[in-house]
Image (cartoon, rainbow, N blue to C red; front, side, top):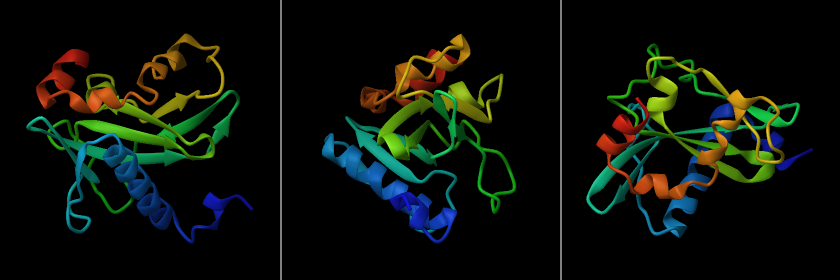
Length: 155
């Protein structure tokens, strides 16, 4: 049994993934904060040079062909979809490969809402549409941008 299969629930695994993200961000010298409780639509706050970004953390172990499918749905307790007024960046962790994708929320929540993305950390994707996410693999520099830069660069 793989270590990520030992979590008792998706919530428990999600909490562990949030800790992994916070540790990875802190290791890269970002100031990290965690909102109290589960009432905020984002999981982690990142501060850098006076900018504060709201990060929604997701994870996947769902292998499909050459990649992993990652869903960008709110959890079942949240009645409404995510909003660009609430989230700046999605951090998607491909657990079996120990790889992060840092994706501007505007790419997923914008005009053409995307609920799922194929992340391909092992091989170059065959479909061109899947390749668009590879520029965000381990792109920690993205967290140095302001909300405005993140919103207007990709809308």
